[in-house]
Length: 417
Image (cartoon, rainbow, N blue to C red):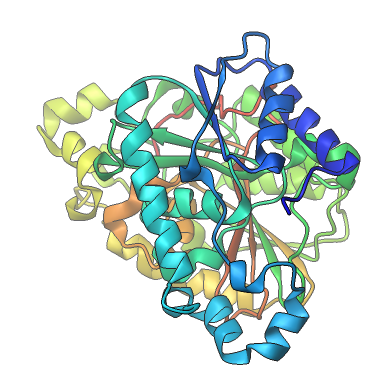
């Protein structure tokens, strides 16, 4: 028997529809299961120019038919070995002669290959389920199957992927993951809840507000450029967004733009002292700093294009390379995580390249994958360590910018790094 939406589920779908109402959706697909069909219909009913709804089995949920209708505790008790693989080694998880999670990733890749060539330069709405949505996101940006449980999907949360072409092999950017702030009237929190059996810390990773050099698309690196007026406004909005979130510790790069962003957020948490770490400073662009893109191209021909296409091999003249950033960031991030007792939450405010490196490190990504995660000025990401700082992290949300402007999309200045 197929499950159907509860009244709460219908309300969640309506709120998701309102959040997407101003977005020009060109095409919509939903799983054939009743709960996904109904969710998609409610979402589209809120859209000013809704497209027709298409149904595809490519959005079907993971097949766990052997465990259907069982509660997790009973599954764990009756199938302890299989449950271990399900939770800890999903790439090895087997039911009968099937590998359900491997099959799900293949299903996701087939769906991308089917729909992307049909809808180049279009905005596509996909309404699926927790498992298939995670497989779609992971397969698009290259997260391995072993990290299947390390991104999260809340009912009627919204994620945004930007494709460079009609193939995932040509590069995909995760603009945002698991946005839930549109559901606040049902949850009383702008952030995703802790997963069940959570026994570790939470870290809120924030990029600093806008600077004038961000707006001008001038490389700033370790030149200490302050926030501009819009950057101060973004910091205030981030402060209001996180005002009701309990924060136990706070850390920042010592540079003006993240430090002032952090202090603004902490104005709502006056008892928390801000700790500064040099390891969180932005990448040093060396001789590129203070220059516009056309000036860099004129002086260092071809290097900017290389930075945008193969960032791992670029050595900034008299500055750093990404491997150096990876190494210093990995150490300080682990130190911060280990400093937090179970159940505590820390604020960490840093920079574009530093935040990208942190997010990549969560999934074992190398500098080659530097451009996967978008980080908007004033954006917030949520990282949990359910099993403690030595366990695998869970990326609950990435690049929340809904507090900065109306709508779901990140409208902050892309800027330079």
